[in-house]
Image (cartoon, rainbow, N blue to C red; front, side, top):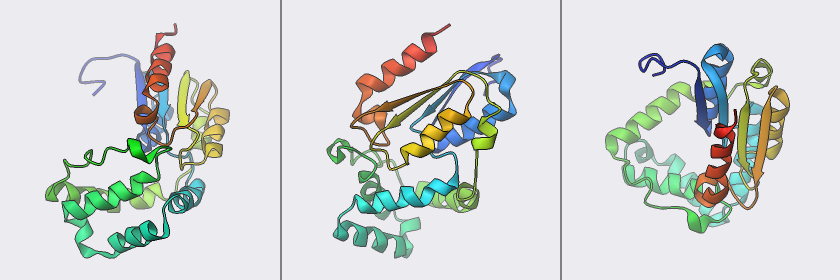
Length: 201
């Protein structure tokens, strides 16, 4: 995309798992990245994923955990858009500080073909995403970096604090009373923080 538009150095943002991709790009092509934004990032290492999964389950009721497990065993999950939406909405509930802010219609765009592609891509990239460590790579990134993280994010705050320590020029902003989707729960803090960071010389 950068080459197609004839751009020089860019401001690169990655959200959630997209932050993992952004870190890889910034490490491989440092000359192309002016500033880096890691927004509600996934952890920098797979060692934090068990704690992430544990937190999600702890935030659900026993009944909800049973429903979630039932969806996972249903063979229709990988092709039925209704089942997939119900499964994802239930899981995403645990991503919020205030589950009432979850928009249950946000996955309405899922249809049969999209569901199949989602699970096919997950099967392809899943092994890579389950075994990774970016912290060594982060030590080579020198561009100014903004990290935004909600204090109620199921991704451990320790994982994100470690990112800020590994990066040479990082600012970590932890937003209170917010989960993984800070842009939904605290937009009045999220977007101004990004704008201030990008406005710096």
